[in-house]
Length: 81
Image 1 (cartoon, rainbow, N blue to C red):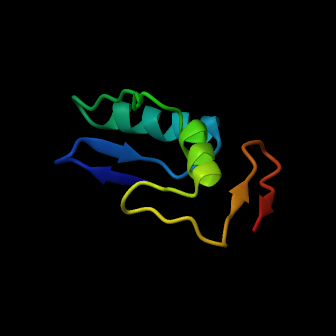
Image 2 (image 1 turned 45 degrees about the vertical axis):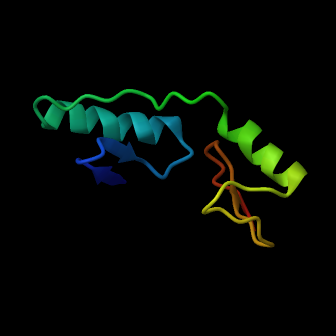
């Protein structure tokens, strides 16, 4: 979990919705005035990354390399590197 109070960002490194919900619930219950909303983008992460791979042109600050780690979103916790 990463909290940037100045930019008003909360980032959770989890592929499990249940874990994210648990953390957010604890924060909202434990910190008065703390609220959250989902990040709203014009393009989904999947569509943007797919476009980067097809065109081989990533935005400034990103690079397309030869390494990748994929994690299952379900309870199997499978990982492919």
